[in-house]
Amino acid sequence: MKKKDKLTDVLIIVGLVLTFSQNLSVNYAINRQRTLEFLDPNYVVIIQRYSKITKHRKKLQHILRYTNNDSLFKAGNHTESDYLPYTKHASNVTYQKKILDQAKHYHYHVKGNKLFLTWNSKKAKMKMLPIVMYHQSRLTLNGKLQTKLKQNTITQPIVKAKKGRNIASLQFITPI
Image 1 (cartoon, rainbow, N blue to C red):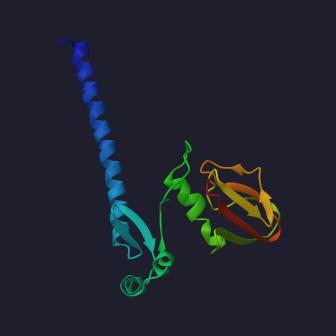
Image 2 (image 1 turned 135 degrees about the vertical axis):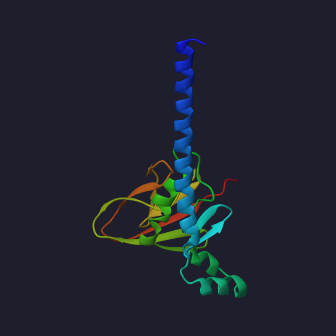
Image 3 (image 1 turned 90 degrees about the horizontal axis):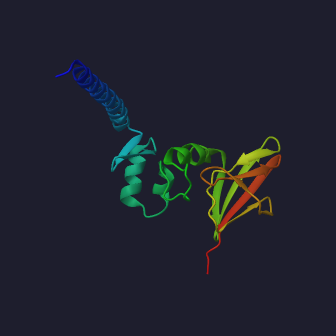
C-alpha cells in the first residue's frame, strides 16, 4: 500500500472517531437533561415529549380522576403547537419563545367565535401578539380592523399598541 493511501485511511478513521465522539457527547448531554427533567416533579413525560404541569400533583390527580371540564387544560402548559402555518422558518422552539413564553403577559378569553387578548401597555409601541394568523384570520385591535399587518416568521401579527389598556380580537373566517 502506498504511503499516501495509508495517510488517507488514517485521516478517514480519525474523522470517523471525532464524529462518533461528538455524537456521543451530544446524546449524553440530551439524555442527561431529559433524565433530570423526568426526575423533576414539574414535568411529565408524554410519548418522548415534555409538558410542564402544575406543581400540585395531587390537584392534577384529582382533575384527571374526578372532573370532566377544562381544568386539565388550565393545569398544563403544552410545549408544542398543534399546527403552524407553513413558513420556511417556523419551528416548535420559535413557537415556545414567541407564543407560549409571552402568553403570561396577556389575559385571554373566548366569546362566540372570537379569541380576545387584553393587556396593558406603559407606552404606545409596536407589539408582537402571542397568536398566529392564518390566511382567513381577521384581527381587530381596539375596535379597528387591522388590514395591513406585518408578521414575523411564524405569522404572528405585529401591531401598534396604544398606551393603557389594549384589546385585540382574533377571528377565523371559514371559507365557503
